[in-house]
Length: 149
Length: 149
DNA sequence: AAACATAGTTGTAAAATGCAACTATAGGGG
DNA sequence: CCCCTATAGTTGCATTTTACAACTATGTTT
Image (cartoon, rainbow over all chains, first blue to last red; front, side):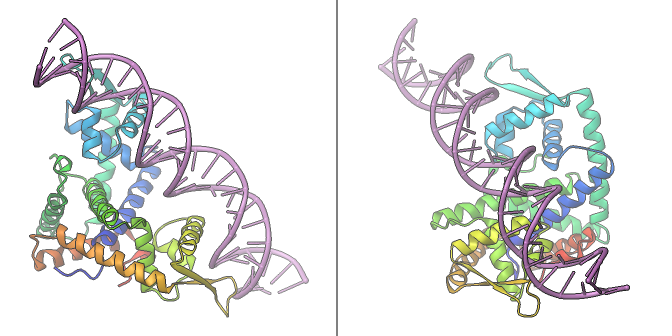
């Protein structure tokens, strides 16, 4: 369990490289959305009745930021906000038709990038990798932030 | 090589959790520095004759940002900027005495966090994990940004 | 010497972020 | 039923981060 390079360094640097790769791919295809937006759309797509507070908890972000991010996604026509019938404070988020379309495109491009980046890595290695990631996430103790799928 | 969760999502989310964990640890110990600053100090410590351009390349950051980040580290008394004798454009960065001290502290706390987060992960799993990370970084094709150590 | 390239700095504007105050609604205990 | 507290969301504001372009100074090439 010794690491010569700090885990934070390792992950942070890798993430930065991967993000650049994805953003380059998006630019190539004239996609104007950011990684953050893709990830938010992904979450909304997977969690049908998600509220903004859910998003804030999951992504460890202030809820004010979530409000604004959702606002821009609504302005872009990709997301709808509907009020909960039982609890009038809550607002549920879901993708519009256009939102589903753009998400499918974003996801396809994301898969392309993933495939490129995982080149030369065996299924076994990848499975182990994902297990380690999962354990790390568990060890952070942020229970609400676990992968949802 | 199938991933149900996009690699970008997986890494990004994990990184966010790990960063929060580290920042919490820093706060506990009344350390006012950020993860970015720790990582910059780490790089300077490892690469004795590094220039600001090297930093910009390594971290995929605009050199103007590097200038300002270094400025604040100099103001804090942790970094020195010395001019290259041969090439007067270049300025080399190195840690001051106080910089080395604070870096050792940051690193120690970083190791604590890493140890907590890697709990329950075998040496073999970790080695494989690091190999996969290394391959991913290679596959991004950003040669200047490889891990340096 | 002229033209171009590189290292670094600075100005400025845009975007992301965090915090606190605020509204509106829900739920619990007296 | 009223009061107190908690939750969901919005808004304002100040701080930080970031990108881009212009600029200076120095080095390199032809």
